[in-house]
Image 1 (cartoon, rainbow, N blue to C red):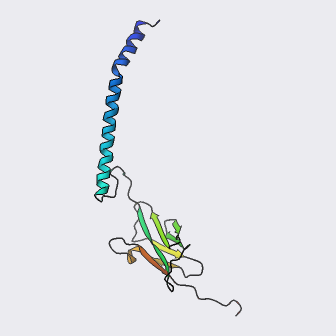
Image 2: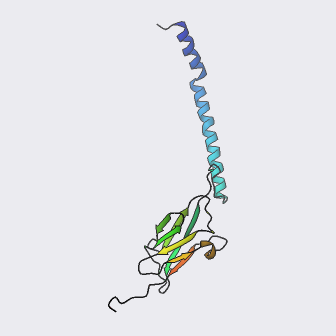
Length: 151
């Protein structure tokens, strides 16, 4: 049998957290969450790219295509890196690449290097090769001169 104190405590807990109260609080929480999600969707549809709720600085994206200078064919498997950032990737079958530099990186100081066996390596600054709209880079690699090992 329960004591009077236990009955009072149980009764007050039931009154405080009745099923109806819990359902109302859950509904309010769902409405608030939906409002913030809706606000985020509207901002993204209107062209705003940053999240309202992400306080971290935006990362810098550098992308482009590596092309054989003589044949104008995309170069697959070229290593593309950003000196000083320890970031690199390989080009895909279409010669495309995309590097993501850490947040707060100054792309005007970034030096992009492109290397592939059989080609001369290239180093360039993205700011010198892209327009104000941040278009993709086109990097042209020239083949290394063939050497005769038996000369």
